[in-house]
Structure formats: structure tokens, C-alpha cells
Length: 296
Image (cartoon, rainbow, N blue to C red):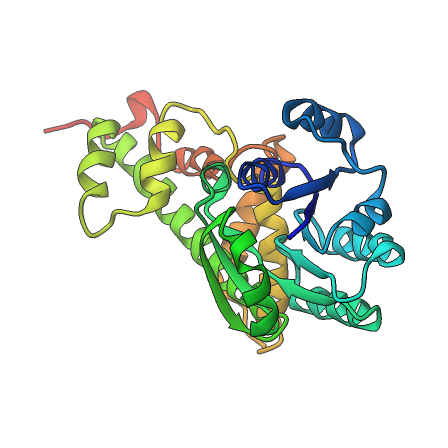
């Protein structure tokens, strides 16, 4: 199935490489031409001139962009070139309302849409092991599943259009809570003057073990916060989660607290760092040096 991808950022570029390796990739496009040109040289494959041209070459188009407005702008740019019964899959994290709006626009062009946000970080994108949460028609998913299996280790149908984004919202709330717990606990361990590498190793092998601790703990305790998943992007996602929770007249404490902490990091110039940069905030909670209590 001839496949194109739009958006060659931290997630999109490795997904494009995996699609190419599996023999599916026919075209790609990126808003920044230099990024597309670099990938074209690496893959020996020409970049599409624009989204409309890409749509004319591909029966399946995968989006990996950043924001709700980006998704709808790309959909509008694709429409003039789309072939009937083409499938557009959005792997971005956007609102459920945006997913439904994209589906409606494509339906008018006799095309199909799946909202399929992913989780697993840059490592998952590089290794083709992402978890993909899909909303849309089961029959459409079955058609494109062999392609998606080149970029995801698990592809799970969650319900109608919008269900993928709803599931991703749940994921992002959990990720915020895990980030809060891990960074706070490791800052606590540091204040207790424990050997952090051993703490990560022993705690990670027990009931408190988790992916974030094992994959981000060693780097954050050395003051390295390479993305990963950027603070500014998670802040954007949690703002969407906050809007969704407000529909139930509920404010979720984990969301509210993390939005505040991320805003502080962004204002301090750390918005492009990995979300493990929250460790900076947690370290500031504890006294340093001579102000710390002494061991008995």
C-alpha cells in the first residue's frame, strides 16, 4: 500500500525510516524543507513538493504534527489531491473534537480517517515498538494494519473516531503522575544522600518500577534532559486533558499541578527539554549543603 508521511519531527522521522525499511514509504513532506531534503538524501527518495502532491501519490497518509491547528491545516492542504477511499491516519496528540472535525472533512471527500495517537517516546519510534491507540472504523484499520505494524508494536482499536485521542488523554494524565512521582522521589533520595544509581536499580526491580524510572532516571540524576518528550508538548497535551475533564466539571489535581510546574520550566527556558526536567523543580524543594540535616 503506497504510504506517505507528513511531519518529520522527533517521532515522524524515525517512523518514516521504519516505513521505508518495510517497503511501504512512497512519499514524505515536512513544513521545513531542509528536514525533508536531509531525509531524501538518506533514503534516496524524493520529498513531495507539497501535501497535495503527496496525496496524489499515496493511498495511505500518516500525519505526525504538533497541534490541533496543524492537523486541520494539513487535512485542508491534502483534500485537493486525495484519491477516493484514501485513508488518513493522524498519530499526533490533539483533542477528540479535532479528530472528529478531520474525519468529517475527509468523509465529504469520500476518504477515511483514523485517529491513532502513539506512546513509547523516541525510543519506541526508532525501534518500531510504539503503542498505537486507534479510533475509527474497524474495517479501515484492518486494511492498513500491515503498514502500521512497521511502526508500532501494538495497534489497538479503541472505538469510533475520537476514541484514540481519548485514550491518549488517559495516557498523558498517567504520564504526568509518573513524572511527578519519579522526579520527586529521586530528589528525595538525593537529599538523603543515597547513591542514586543504586536507588534506581533496586527500586526499579520492585513494585515501584516503571518505564520512566528505568529510561529517564539515570540521565536526569546526571543533569541530562535530552528529549525524549518535550516539556512544552506535554504541557500542550495536558491542557487538552484539562479541557476534557472540565466537561465533567472536574479539575484533576495531577493535571493542575503539572501544568503549573511545566509553565515554570518553560518560563525558565527549559520547554524543549525532556519532561524529566521536572527533576529541576523537585530538587529545589530540598535544602542544600550545610542546611541539610546530618546523619546520626
